[in-house]
Length: 394
Image (cartoon, rainbow, N blue to C red; front, side, top):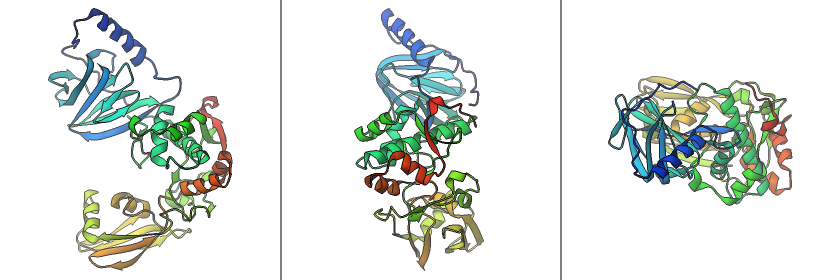
């Protein structure tokens, strides 16, 4: 991780008159902030970005420290408003120096902008904005991921598979991005995570029952990419991102025909497309066409050609999905069937198509296939192991 700027405080807050309370908080700080939250691996998730200010609360107490372990603020059952202030932060009405704050609560009950989180929270300065990073044990993190990434009423084996691939993906990102200020973001760009309030019993059971299990290829973590609906065949990763991973070469998937995204149609106003492109800092005039230009060997759109009043623009298929919006353009398996003021697309599948198909996993689980069988089907040549027995390396 990047070394944050050393912070000092002009004033140390201890807003209590009870000596016993101060001593107990001091002990809790030593126990909580100077050790890991749990015996397992921790994960760091960027849960909020580009905030002018952030409100954080706790029903037990708030403990705020700098990166050197210096206590800046303690308060029972309260909330604080944190904002950027030169040369550091404003905590309610008080200024402190630095570029990073670490916040915990003794009862593990932090609430950030209305969302409840386990573990600790870091507040980082990003220019005039704030970034919020939640650090917690990976097993606790997964309890908030699995119900967001897969329907909670799906077969228990499917939920266990989801827990294993989500755990593997998170650890892979942590291992392969050691210099970042966080390991993952909390959106579809990595894995959707919304904290304690979105946990569900069945998903939690799947996490607990697969505790520590990951997908490996040889002695290394696999890159367990996954998506909603392949619509017949998963993609070779070489066709999408150019990487060469033997367990991501693509397989037939005749199991996902019941997915609501097996076939789809979208009507998209050209003005909406123009606005999306401009928000991504692409200089375009009035759009005339938005059409497939190159296809890969599986028939997915590899490159899109955009004609506009100031010229033409070419985008890779997955880049276009990211810019336009994944719900607007569910996959790169599509055709343009009409264009005027609106563009009508017909397509199939949802997601990038690489790795595990979630709807295919659902059906295979219902048919009685084991979790290892499902994982070996979508990631040929892999094994399922406990990450705590591995010598993890990049």
